Image 1 (spheres, rainbow, N blue to C red):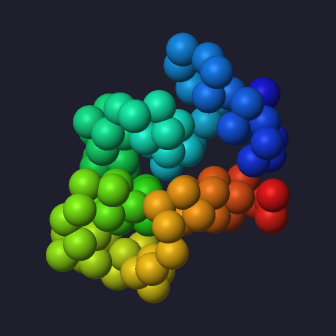
Image 2: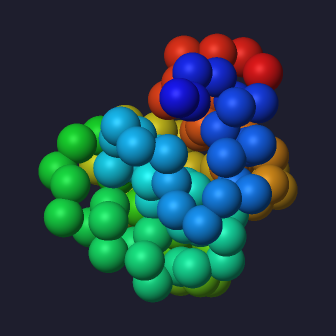
Image 3: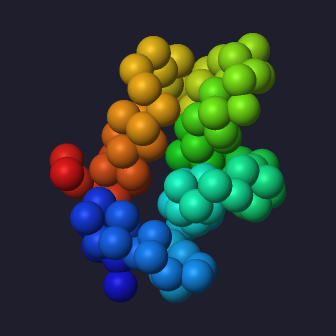
Length: 100
């Protein structure tokens, strides 16, 4: 069971996301595994703000900053300016309710 960011990161050694993860966390899991299409498919059908944040991150990864900006606004987030890795870690920590 994934309960914090270190557990989530450790779960990346597996073949699939841990059971019970939210759609946004599953999207981040697939993004970390290099499967942008699977990650995008998961979050594009979720209308929540957390999914919109992950959606924004994914379009930033893709290099589509205009589309990313739209999704940051939908998420109520300021567009990220730091590294993709730092943003990924920040989203994971926030969604899991931890700081590490």
